[in-house]
Amino acid sequence: MTDTQLIQLAEQMLSRSYAPYSKFCVGAALLGKNGKVYTGCNIESAAFGATICAERCALSTAVADGCREFETIAVISSADDYCSPCGICRQLIFEFGQDTRVLCARNSEDYKEYKISELLPLGFGPSNL
Ligand code: THU
Image (tube, rainbow, N blue to C red; front, top):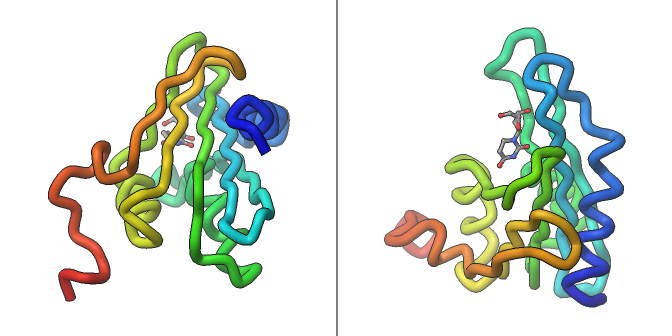
């Protein structure tokens, strides 16, 4: 699974996004260390606070499948810009490993790569409890 393929899977999820309020569609694809890919999209709610981001949607599917170790998560939006995970998503990605790669994609050829620990410096994680 190449980075480009993972971003393409995230991009396919844009059509599944439920974003009637913001109209900002987000897709994510998460590569587990088990070799499986878990995808997600954002799911909005009329009660805005109940909205789920694409990244946490993908993480939920993965954890429910028994996968808790990840190589990479790719994130892309319907806007023509690099899509960066929100703070809550950074926290939940960090929960499952400080070294997870995060691909903030503009399209499948144009993306920026970070480690989650770069996006969440001094993050509070399982080792802090
Ligand atoms: N959104 C995500 O899905 N992931 C992020 O990391 C940033 C924000 C969604 C939530 C909401 O449905 C829309 O984008 C606008 O904030």
